Length: 156
Image (cartoon, rainbow, N blue to C red; front, side):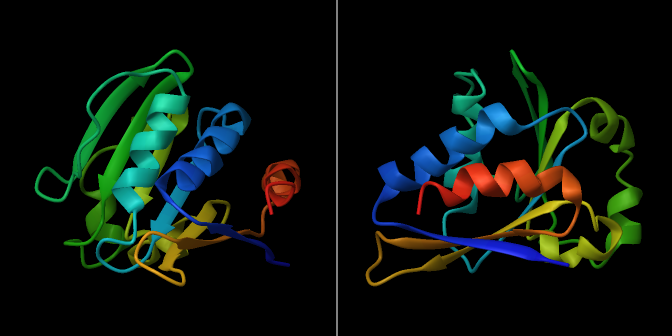
């Protein structure tokens, strides 16, 4: 059964607070699939998440590099952009599997490879009432995410 939490972030600071609330709940081998249209805030969310995990590294979109790696006190964060990938098989050919076992993976355009990650946390970012507000639809079906969704639900 898929469980879903919907949050409204009225500005970038509120979006960053959602990322900050999620950060301490993450563990190595967690996978987060981010989706949303262009400029919905996927990279911004990742930047706020990496910062909340304790890194001051400059988080940039991995659109052209496909993957960026950030070291945090909580472990490695693998930031992948799947936009240019055709399917999950192409994703596997990148050779990033080791990072999935030992780090936290954040995958933009995650719906392109979602069939391979049925235990992932999915976050869809959409536009709210204006260009600064975001609607975050957070969902998961794996029991691992129940306490995470409970905690995020308190932000509503």
